[in-house]
Image 1 (spheres, protein in one colour):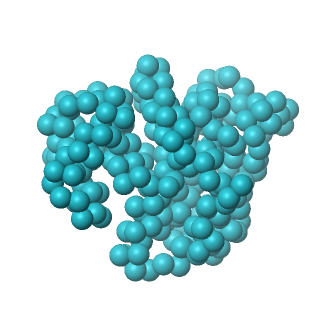
Image 2 (image 1 turned 90 degrees about the vertical axis):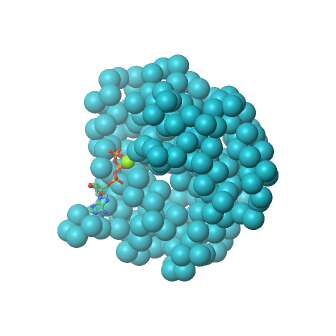
Image 3 (image 1 turned 30 degrees about the horizontal axis):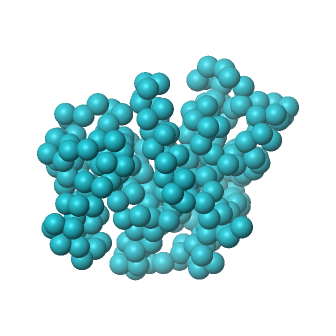
Length: 251
Ligand SMILES: Nc1ncnc2c1ncn2[C@@H]1O[C@H](COP(=O)(O)OP(=O)(O)OP(=O)(O)O)[C@@H](O)[C@H]1O
Ligand SMILES: [Mg+2]
């Protein structure tokens, strides 16, 4: 198995508040990792660290064996972000732009495609997310589930090698959760690698190959889905047991 992303001994604090205290794991080509952990344990900060929106105090992020966590040049970072794409936790879309402009934005920014080619590309991804022909709608015209999918369309329009999904199913009803996970599975079948941060355990079990649990600044558990669901460790059961939302938010 080919390792494409590696986190080596990541430490991060905000002032006195220690968030990451030696995070280690790797992501293999084609693999989907589920990153679980209580609220405020530093899951989003970790995803942001991977793409250089946040700086670790020490430790390295390696992409294809190259240290990317020391890159300072915005141009180079932008290039990395076309290969490792972050699908944001909160409202991913520009409210004042229609669906076409939202999805086309990275294409105008990072490619030399002409307008016609961009139109084709946007139409292609909309087809992939089963939302054909909605280019001219505004984000406010869309349901929450549709907005999430359009946000994901923007995250995948440059064909990144890795997508970092930050709570893609949060706040969605069961039908839309299913749509979003179906879409992620479709991309996974096409060879996409990903890290899914979520409190939605059934979706993590459905989508992921491995589960990681972040606890007290470290990766407390790193195992396959069966190892996760069959564990008798109370710290893991807290997440894997089909309980209410409170249980999955405990840290
Ligand atoms: N820029 C920042 N400055 C100071 N503290 C921050 C900053 N960003 C995040 N934090 C703190 O770091 C901690 C981890 O935040 P993070 O957003 O990664 O949590 P999370 O695990 O994603 O939580 P949730 O599941 O609620 O999304 C929190 O206590 C947060 O308040
Ligand atoms: Mg978060």
